[in-house]
Image (tube, protein in one colour):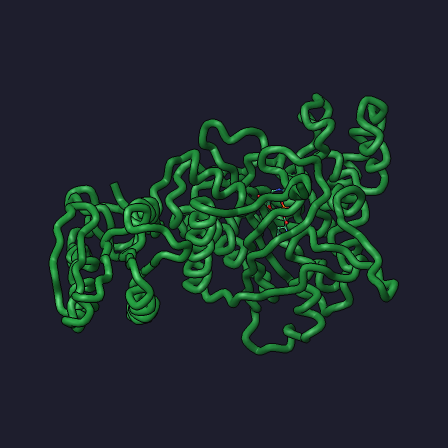
Length: 460
Ligand code: HAM
């Protein structure tokens, strides 16, 4: 039997419904912030990631899937989305577009050759957004708040936002010097990788997975103490906008991020729900003002964020967030003979095109087994097509929960189902709006005893 590759997952069944819902909320929220969807290739020239993410990062030194294609080109499966977006921005000269900044979002698979464990896969799915062409601290704060609001819209409550600043080039250089001076006398106590990082890129020592618990790392100099006045001022302005946008955050000087392209604001959002395990960072991002220039484009200030959907789905499960998933079908159509089957084929198509979720029998089950199948599919209504009824232009339709059965005219079937199934429209008229729900909108709440509100969220 051929098995899936290590660190890869099949997303299916109930979990697939959760994923689709999560992705729909991401799309809807990104739209509200006026971000355009972008889809870049799954593979790019190896050079893009080496020059973009940084030669000394763990991702580039150990984790990329590299291969030569049949034409002898050096290719890498994308380990993250930012480099591809920046490549596209430069290649398509999007910097010339008068509607700067360019605000884009993506959602797709990335590949990292990591040691698979809970929350760390080799094929992972990330959604992310990038703002290219704005240096305004408001755009930093807005990217952070957009990330937080996506989690909130999904109903996550137990999250923590950690922010930090790496400062501008001058601040980063001063900090780099301080780190070298600090680590040099005791570098022998750290792993081999860290020893080679010391001169190449000492910042990377701080996010070493091997030495993360070492006392030397814990007491290392903090970026914040090396920011020049301009960088400090900028960071203060980002914090002010975060306050205006109502984002709760903590300044955490330990956030340095694992990719080389960052400067100024960096941030990570953690899941705080119990039982998550050690890979609890839902997403991270930051400003990368040098990257477009480094990849041969014009100097362009940028900021972005990405989040692993697998980790997000796990957080939703652990927080037991209720989601408006469609787990039931509206109608299961049953039949016995060939003529009835043909009518079932015709009718299911008509009803589907009218907007109902309809299924029927495909593997030759007898009538008794078809009833069982209808239950397995959580059919709200069932109908046994019967030639005699059909000849009279009638159908017997049964509520599969109350077991009440009615015979109705076939011509009235769509109206009948619409009335029965959309009876919950009464919730749309709900007017109570004084309590807050997790979508942040005006909708119904506990007091109404309604389960669903017009925003499509489920409220207890
Ligand atoms: P990153 O921190 O490497 O940043 O990844 C972002 C998120 O992707 C992580 O917080 C995590 O949720 C998820 N992730 C990463 N690796 C794995 C893995 N092996 N298995 C499961 N999930 C994983 C970036 O990728 C940057 N491109 C973010 C960014 C966008 N910065 C600016 N713009």
